[in-house]
Amino acid sequence: MTSSPQTSLEVSALGEYLDGALLRIEDALSGYLPEAEAGPGAGCPARLALAMRYAVLGGGKRLRPVLCLMAAEACGGAAEAAMPAACALEMVHSYSLIHDDLPAMDDDDLRRGRPTCHRAFDEATAILAGDGLLTLAFEVVAREVRPHSAALRCVQILAEAAGPSGMVAGQMADLQAEGRPELQSHGRLEASVVETSATLAALESIHRRKTGALLRAPLRMGAVIAAAPEPRIEALDRYGKAVGLAFQIVDDLLDVQGDETKLGKRVGKDSELGKWTYPRFLGVDGSRRRARQLADEAVTAIEPFGTRGHRLRDLALALLERDR
Ligand code: IPE
Ligand code: IPE
Ligand code: MG
Ligand code: MG
Ligand code: MG
Image 1 (cartoon, rainbow, N blue to C red):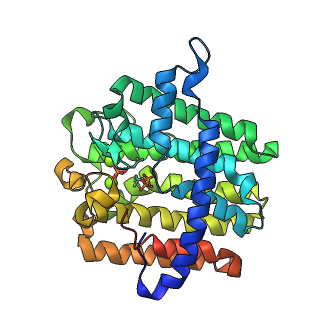
Image 2 (cartoon, protein in one colour; image 1 turned 180 degrees about the vertical axis):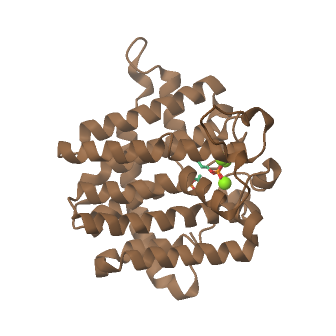
């Protein structure tokens, strides 16, 4: 992330926090992922383990886990207690990226500065690595989050965010909005996105589900693990909702204006594929203004936390300036 002059002090303090958190998250993730050395017949096949480790480790900003740790801390809880949930979020996110990059979806060859999982391995292995990560995420939450009541709530939050009314719904709508003919037919009772006129509300609905949902979940999960009272959970949820949408708006902007080397993924793909994006609907300046407005909304939402919310505040503002 780069910093604006006004926020450079806060951002550097944030940068230090993020560097430390990143190492701890990487370590914990590595511990949860299957090893390739287990040997024949012993659990996870080596190729599958390697593909899962390849897709998850050694890259990524780890924003979803960081949000989970920060939420727990803002509520007076320990970051370590939130680490299993944080890792589960990153597993679900990494799976969504593997599948997002597949030829049948966005057909990308570069992710996190390296060949995409299906390029480094093969399509079948990439699909299964995604399946493995999604399932492992729930295993980790169920086994590691304590107390059991918090684990149960986290399972529900994560499932709703990732599932067929959350991220998966957004991905379906995102692809249908491209106008691919083979994706336009639909069940008798189901309204398809093609029936929706190309309005800003429809675009917002795609972005809130495909990306927003999985960025909103960490705030709730972190707060639940820290046993926060309901009004605090709701305040963090409002923050997550605003940051989640702002994040995808900036992602759209980076596809137009970003640098492939810094981003570690291709640019210019959205217009090539005919995606619905904020720059397409609002232009670059309008998109920037909307992202700024959402970051301000996020900052306002966490005012009740006082100084305990400072990291979340700094992060919401820094995400506007990110270049990767
Ligand atoms: C990329 O997410 C895909 C979107 C949901 C916009 P990130 O920008 O968080 O990707 P990594 O995890 O840092 O690689
Ligand atoms: C991805 O959105 C959303 C999910 C992976 C769920 P994009 O398709 O815009 O993400 P990038 O730009 O490929 O990272
Ligand atoms: Mg996509
Ligand atoms: Mg994509
Ligand atoms: Mg994108």
